[in-house]
Length: 113
Image 1: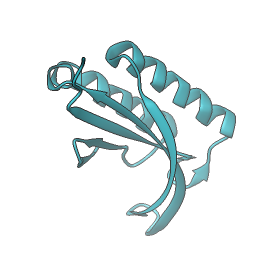
Image 2 (image 1 turned 180 degrees about the vertical axis):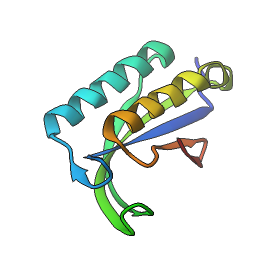
Image 3 (image 1 turned 90 degrees about the vertical axis):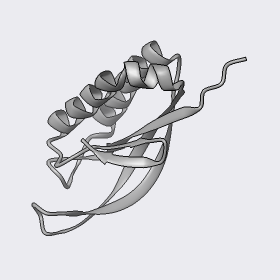
């Protein structure tokens, strides 16, 4: 029996350049790439849909959007060992989608990458 007592979630936005809707095909490709990378490191992960909003300092308004949440359960050792890999994935998403930040939730604590 494995006990995976830590978890993290990457919030994948459905927009690029803050508020422009991304093509569904491209979004699915990005999601599949993230799932592949995380599954190789952690053995698997799950994604699910959500909807939320956040205030953009650049646009000076609330941005409402669908997000894909990609969640992984893991051990504290694997989480610590691979923290740089997780943040690198978030930084790649941020760059590709030209976002102000990417949300990374670790054990119920939210970080903006």
